[in-house]
Length: 297
Image (cartoon, rainbow, N blue to C red):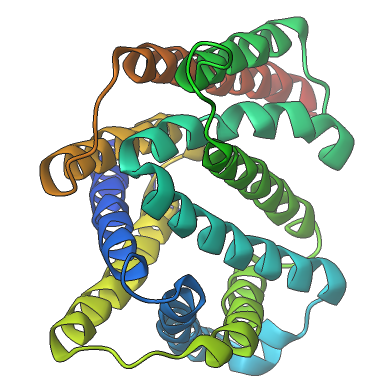
């Protein structure tokens, strides 16, 4: 039986957001100097090693992890996440951490919007209203028609869509495959794809940047471990809202280290998006709580 400790889960989720924010800052720095494909490829090498190390420690080992009942969907999930990382890192270099994360925080709204066609779930009018309000927040950030619209601004929105679809497909494959199988296929398929691309863009790296790359890889492993542990000790609905703190930590890093500008429209728009996202999470929790008693015999 899974241990339930909401306080520890919240602490672990906050720690996860700090580590992932640091990872984003390191990714922006390295991708500003070296090819994005190469940077993400090396990240995935370490991620795959971490996945394999965790897999061999579980009952059944690698043989059980490989034995998926949905190889095509599992492979597609892994590719989707890998290319989402590539596009998001590119967005960091073109837009900065503040604006990229402000737009990317719309992904819970996309999860709610896509849960119907992907999972067959019913989305009520309250959540549809929140989705609409959230995307008004995105428009406030982008300011179409007010300023010269940057084509790069579409990148974090594409990432939000890809990450939302990845999350929904993860829930879809969980109907037939255990989490360990999905985790294994995510790491391995992404590493294979990024090696096939990144190997063509290899660049010599300075010793100091190799140190930063090692730190980046360690943050990726640590961040995933903290996230896994957070969901092991607490209910997802209780700790998921704290994932929005990554916007604050990444923005603080972008402003202090990279000199990103903090515009009023970005602050207002991000506040609207986060508020709408929190509302959709709350409504999903209310709906799950109302269904649970009726499901009991």
